[in-house]
Length: 138
Image 1 (cartoon, rainbow, N blue to C red):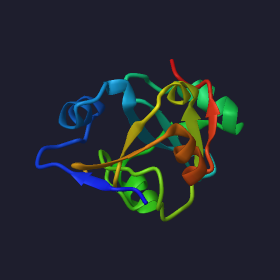
Image 2 (image 1 turned 90 degrees about the horizontal axis):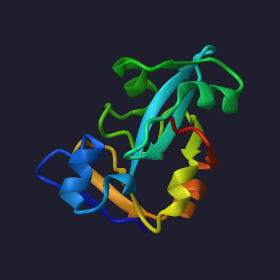
Image 3 (image 1 turned 180 degrees about the horizontal axis):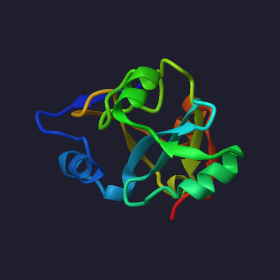
C-alpha cells in the first residue's frame, strides 16, 4: 500500500532527500542503526533536522549503545548506510522513534536504496516498525 519513489539523484542524506522530494528536511525519517553491548541492533529514527542523542536512546533500551559500522548495518539490516529502510531488516531491531515525528502530517523514509523513498504518516511508521515515540533528540 506504500508507493516507492525512485530518483536519479541521491536521497542518501536528509538534505538530499528533502531537495529531491520537495519537502522540508524535518519530514525525512532519518534511520540510523546502533549496536547494543550484546550485539543486538537498535534502529533510531529521527526527524531529518534532528540529531539522535545516544545517551537518551541508551536510557530507553537500558543498555549502552555503540555506533554501528557499515558491515554491522549491512549484515543486520540488509541495507547499506544511506538507504536503511525502517522495515524489512534481516535481524529485527529494537526501534525508537523521535517524538518530534508525531508533529508531522506526512514523512518520507528510505526505501532500501540511496535513491528511493516512500511516504507515510508517523502513526503508520510506528505501526510498521513496532517502535515507540521517545524523547531522543539532542
